[in-house]
Length: 276
Image (cartoon, rainbow, N blue to C red; front, side, top):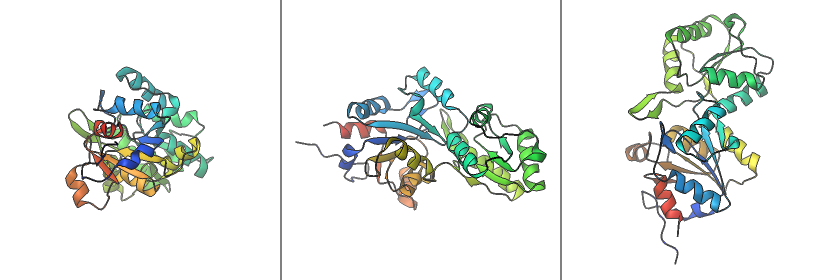
């Protein structure tokens, strides 16, 4: 007899047993800093053992896929190059499709800048030639870099883009400012607000579905942020599962307008419900 499988709020979660494409956020969902969260390894093994596929879709643009692979190896997370799809990759694709031949000024990590250049984006350090300003989750940010971005946005007619709207990134001691908070500083100083490319836009979810040939009914997004992870699933019209190991809280879910389809304490609760 199949056991009853319900989420934190008592909602029937049985439909998760039919999912084949699992799209996981990373920070606050699968790990925090270098520590894997409960159930991560068990759930990933369950997915592959049942002919499914998992892909990590992350708004963290501070690292390249190669950086993520190195981290995965270090912490014991089973992953290959095609296991990751980042907001940096989505941003590069967006720039190539919409601003081909334009000069891009980038405020971001060295890894992010190198990743853009590697796929043919024309990144320039000459601010006066910039057509587009892109801001990422800049963990190497300095006041000099921040002021330079503000100067360009106020003195030149440029497009303003950013990789992701996340306000905070989970770390071992709590949270640190993410790209959304960096952009909030820039907006307060310049009055300019960027167009955000990563989640909650459905582009990342839909790109992975298309690449691997899965339907919306076969796909599920799992994450810890309501306004990015969960909303990206809603916008892509796939099931969205929230785990309470990162930013989202029960109070946020109860009081907010963004409602996940299912909610669990952590990935272990998902795994335990899936295993008969």
